[in-house]
Image 1 (cartoon, rainbow, N blue to C red):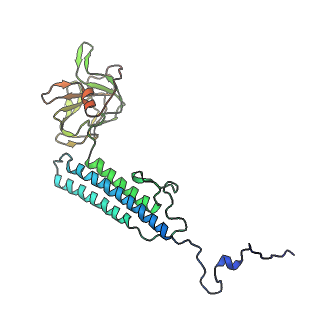
Image 2: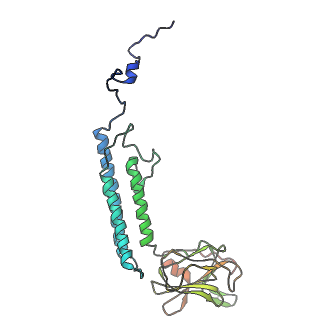
Image 3: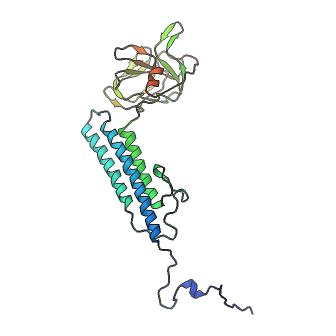
Length: 284
């Protein structure tokens, strides 16, 4: 019969159960967070809160200088201020986390745990990286809503015909070949001054832009805006169509100056930060 002798390396049942198995408290075998771990959590929270408050502070001037919104502008500004205030409150909450008890080190790297790295900050504990990622997403949504891009590409399609003489006549815009129903984005922020039928274009949308120019979007299939509506750069205002004098689905974009003179859209867009290469193809 084998003998189970104990030696210096043996583990007894009492060892597994704890200090006392007979009615006395059994040890928990759970590592309590050390002072160093708590300091790491506090330091991580402070860095995270600083990043969040800094991003919110950068957003405030942008909101203050944003283009005015005609309909209920006071409410628009108040909503923005309230949202930023809530983001800062989240930072304050993150900066003072509740006491942590965990079986693993509390300063475990966020990327190792599969957690996001908000604001580019790594090595954050999961209990900080999670809420901070939500706050970062809130700020990004606010920036998109209240601080639209300065300019945007009108469609994803390629240029099929440029500004200038074409087939013995002057072509006053740039054609972008794209699929039927593809979204058309407003190049600049402005106000819709017309959305409806137009000779040669079938349907068009015209936007009086904030820089004093007018953008014309021709041959559209669906109009998603109406006269008098305020639009931001990047907003979807229509879809690509094949209406009017057209041989295939495309967007015809024209830019008129303040006097109504038609200019080449490509250098004008480049001056706004939207640089596009000429890609010649069949004229549409």
